[in-house]
Each structure stands twice: as C-alpha cells, then as structure tokens.
Length: 115
Image (cartoon, rainbow, N blue to C red; front, side, top):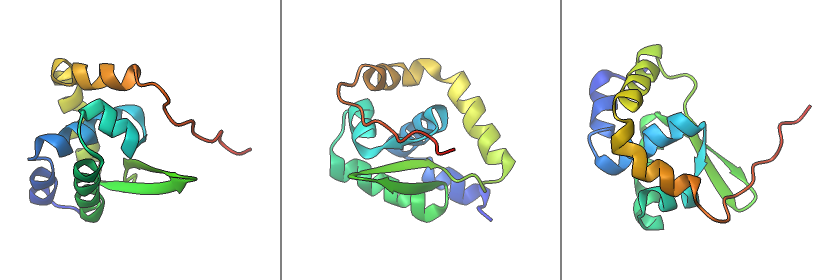
C-alpha cells in the first residue's frame, strides 16, 4: 500500500506531477506523447516515468514499439481523488501541455479493445 509521503514525494517534481496529471486525464500515454506534451527529452521523461512506476503510481504496457503508461488501478481511492481535484483546480497550469498533446502530429494509434 502506497503511503502519503511516498505519493507526495513522487509528485514533488514538476515533470512527474505534470506527467501524472496528463496520464490521469488521458487514461494512458506513451513516452513520445509525454515528450511532446512536456516539451522534454526522451531520457528525462523515461527517467521520471521509471520513478513513478517503481513507486507504484503507474503501470506500463508494451504495444509494438510503444510503451504506454497508466495509473495503477490498485491505488487507494484517496490518490485518485487527489489527482482529480488537483487536475481540475489547475487546468490553466496544464493548458500548454494539453494543447501540445492535442496538436501532436503522428500520435501512436492504440489497438482497439478486443471483443
């Protein structure tokens, strides 16, 4: 079970909190989408995602050449609530990131859900 200090320590970095809030909003994102949205390099984004994954906040899955990240569905409800409230209260802070993501050329196509 993830503790409040672990959650807030992970989210104390601007890149990690922006990535987490974007992932929470979008459901899942790949590294290339986060690179575009956060306007940052692949090594930096991957390093932060690895820390979020090792803390238990995120899970990943591979689809072809892409690795997608999503919130861990087993997180306590309070974590989801904190992320939701933070995202809603700070939409302006994330506006530029969301806009870059929305306008990204060549976004990877996710496989359709199976039957």
